[in-house]
Image (cartoon, rainbow, N blue to C red; front, top):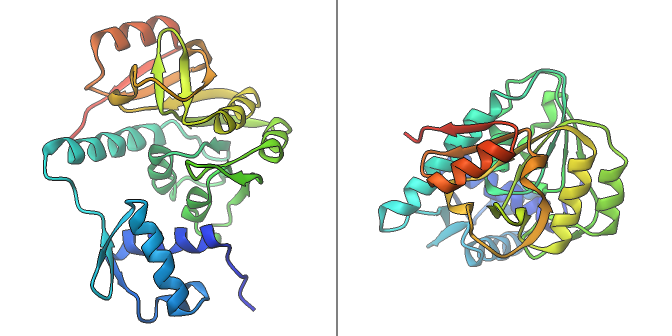
Length: 254
């Protein structure tokens, strides 16, 4: 008997199918995730309300790029950062992937790296690793936060008890005064616990994160052994990261 998926696992599976195929039809979609088509329709509507897909008659499609160049450029920057970061992963490592757009893209880049064990607080990242790959994937427990990440005391305790080779942390903002930040306090505490459990820390952020403000602090700039960003990062941001983080990698955006 197939395992029953949670709501978030089900929606992540639908999102992955839309990403793979470019779109889905509601009719028959329920059989893919083990629910009725009525429930699958509600899942698709939820994904559309969150801006993750575009609802069309009879189904859903990948979200289209916005009318201006910035949206497409932002997606290309995140994809370039993910590809560059994938080259930092070594076969056989235990890696942590904190929830985020760029870390999800990174997860999809790691299919060919042998022997990985993965720890994450994001259901879509866990689902990005095919069960047939033989990888061990540990999904931290906890309560779903407003950003969609699993957080709370359970996730914090699980993260603190781990021994991780490298953690890849996507951040919502970074600046010279506050350091790296997550969308909320609960996510920040999980991030801090996983960073403390790792031997290496790699931060992934596009240039718009610099001095974006808000959020809760995860760690100071000095905590990062490597920061991977794109060529749009301002001069002040480059200077601060070069002086205070271990290494700054500026990736070109196609």
